[in-house]
Image 1 (tube, rainbow, N blue to C red):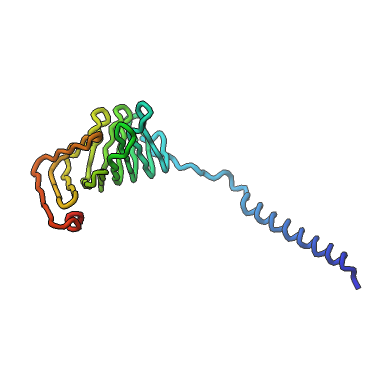
Image 2 (cartoon, rainbow, N blue to C red; image 1 turned 90 degrees about the vertical axis):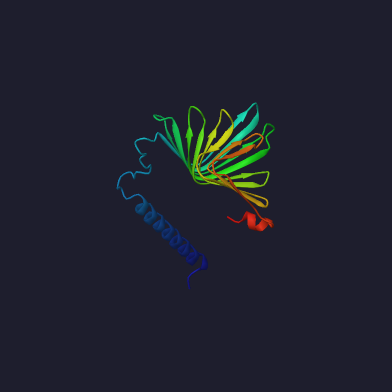
Length: 195
């Protein structure tokens, strides 16, 4: 009869051989010698830097002015512009409290002026309770002003407004509609908030 320590040694040696064999197979499969694999995608000719999941922010005198989050950002130095996809912006007042949020399918940020153009399914929500919908909107950083020359639809409380253009001052949220302004007042709030 074999001693128990002899069969335990054999079992341990067999386990070591099996683990070593598995390691050899894994190493051989992962390092076949096919040469290096291109991991980095080539950027389009007009793009100098491409980033994913980005977060921009601007502060003045220690107070946040606005923040921007986007799924992607493609910077083109030659044209001084950054193209962003799936963008969300939040604006703050002079003491850092949130005033307005914007979302859009895409946008463009001008490097020199800091201006932003939002395109496609643009939605503006104010802390005062109104929602603005349009297809194109521009933010003028110098004037701290949001503008649109596309048709605009606003829902607020029991009222809906529409017009051909919009101007909104970010700091005090003063809003002006222009061109063919129409207003509908509803007796119940739920009907007014429907798209």
